[in-house]
Image (tube, rainbow, N blue to C red):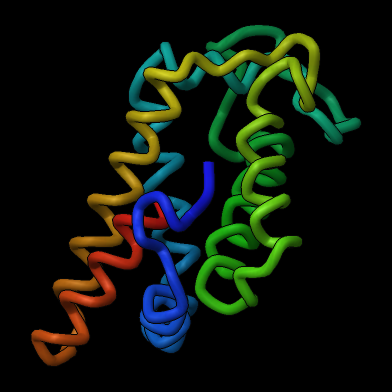
Length: 159
């Protein structure tokens, strides 16, 4: 589906990039909040037990053995941090759109690990949580009303 379907355009990209100075420094806190939430529920936490695409280290034996400081979780947190930083700093060109599509596919057997198939309901819940965290963060910034509105709408379209 084309980004133009929801009206995502140059003004939205400018609003997202304009937020970079505010959002990029707090990416680590956003990543921690996401993983804290994912670890609260067995349904989402257990998705980290199978070997993940590109990860070569030790995997946990079961959900109970999976701790927040596990090397695999640290790798995932690093990837999510880079992903969020890219969203607010890099051009939204064909490469970015392909990368965004690949990130989605990596959570399925289509492009990631054959053992990994994250249910759509969990991916939607995660995106909803991330959206809420971004909204809360953007509303806490000292931006004028028009900039706040443009930034919120741009991220809403993006997510």
